[in-house]
Structure formats: C-alpha cells, structure tokens
Image 1 (tube, rainbow, N blue to C red):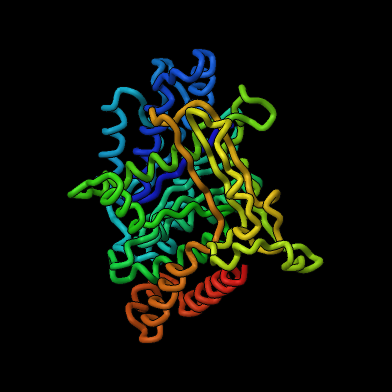
Image 2: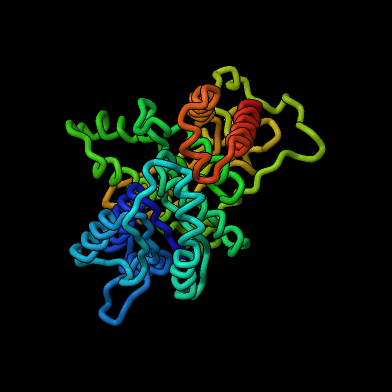
Length: 398
C-alpha cells in the first residue's frame, strides 16, 4: 500500500528529500543476511510505498512539494535529480514568490484559502497514481509561517476530503532557546489545529537531535543537513518494511498500520494492584510503545522489559499497549538496530513550557496584531490554549 508524502515549507522539503534519499539508498543496499529473494521483496515493498516508476525506470517519489518561495523547492528538485537514483515528479510542486514571514496566521488564513484548489489538486493527482492508497505523511515545522500555518490548513483539508485515510504529521519541535520571536505562538496554533485534524503526530525535538549529532556522532560544526540526515535515518527505520505477523517472509503492506485510537475503559480505571513495584522509579508513563528491530539476531532479542506494567497507564494492559515488529533485513547497513515509537508523557514538559511562554506573551498583547490582521482572533488563541492545557492535564494524569 502506498503513502503520499506532503512536504511543506523549507523544513518539510529539506527533510523530505533526506527521507526519500535514505529510503532508496537502504532499499538498494544488498544485505548478506537475507536471500536474494528477500532483498528483492524488501526493495519492491519500499518502492510500492514511496515511489512510482516512469518508463525510464527512474523511481519517482510519491510526494507533493509546497512552499511559498521557490528557492528551497528548486534546490530540492535539483538534488534529487542529480542523485541519479530517484527524482520528484515534474509537476508535483507548488510555489509562489512571497513567503509567510514567520506568521502562522498568514500561512493559514491567507496562503491557505488563496491556493487551496491548486495544492489539493496536486495531492489528488498523486493519490490517483496509487494502486492501493494507505494515507498521508505530512512533513512540516512547528515554528514558522508556511510550514506550520499552511501545513495546518492543508492537514485540515486532507481530513475533510479523505476522512477514512490516515493522516500522520511529522513535526519539528523548535529549539528551546528560540529561532523566531513568535515561535511559541506558531507552535501553540499548529499543535491545537493538528490535534483536531491529524490521526497521529510524530514529533522530533531539534534540541534532542542536535545532541545526537554532538555527543553520539561527534560532529563539531553541526549543520541543518546533519540534523536532517539523522531525522531521515530515524524515520526510514520506522517506515521501511518489516515482516508481517502472519509470516516471517512476507512484509507488512500497510506501514501506517498502528492503532492510534486509544481510549480509557468505560467501566473506569482498573485497580492499582496490577502495577509492579518498579512504578516507584517514576518511569515515563506510556499509552503505547512500538519497538522495531532490524538485523542480526533479531529473533532472539529480549524485549520483555517493555512489557512491564509500570511503564504504562493503569487502565491498559501491556499486551494491548506494546507491539514489536521484527525483520532480519538490516537498515542502512547497520548490523542491527532498534527504534522506539512511543506515545507517552515525554513531551509534557516541553509542551507546557511552550504554552506558558506563549500565554505570557499573549497576556501582554505582544505581536497579536500581526495575527489579527490576517484573520486570527484573540478567541482563536484562547481556544488553542484551552485545548493544549487539557492535553497536558490528560497526559499528566496517565
């Protein structure tokens, strides 16, 4: 089943390129642990998900590129074509000559409605190319104007037009020290709108990825390209094929096939007696964890620690909250790798910090006029604060 990727703004387009490049590099790297037949099945499954193929045999990314300025899109198209391995579709991009000036409201209320028909038509054409369509993967930032504002608008339209298809947004959490003065406003508005229209948010923090580059990779002068490549490897290791539950030699057809609908039982919370004593260690409580294991000795890997009830909220049994996917086909030539996708309390503190900073600015009316002149009213801010404060409270009470 195929995924259509929507790359929005500078951040989304730069990361999108790295993701597609990492996916194709990996699928073409022969793995000695696997038979020729298994390698070919892996490569075919990857291509089916993320690429279509033209007569020349060059894979074309199943993607739509959107930005309000042409520079980054032109660079992205050129880099893909120059790779010689894959490219973007000739008519799969939309750009203008005026950006959003880091103003979420301009991206959402001005660019969005003005260019809605053109953007949605491009996306529809890409969906129609899929023999079997699974859903959308939307790559965007949280702090800027086009990626966050237009990204929220496009996601909302995708929910309206494709209500039965999964919408997963991959969003970049801004540096805590600040990138733009209004990034907290933009982040609050982005998250609140995506919460209403997206099925899943896959979050990466710039600060956390920066630490990986500095401490684990020992990169002295860290560039955005370095950060984007780390993100691409993490995303690729999640989205590349894994064996299905039915067979150790057949790959899952639906890469987004995670049950994102988690609700407390109607009968109330179960007794706390089921909790293990290790709860006193104050683990980061989760609603769900998915571990993806790839490479050598994958079948003998011990994942019992992830089944400890202390890791999960009291109203979910680990058997329902934890999943593991395995394949002996390694990723990106690593001998073995493990990836954790977690729905947990991890983002409560940074989210609370962003909301508080935005609220303090809002209380003093700082920069509000930039948003109201584009159609975003003070009530819209208040609604966003209320929704996110409820999300924070819900996760704190897991």
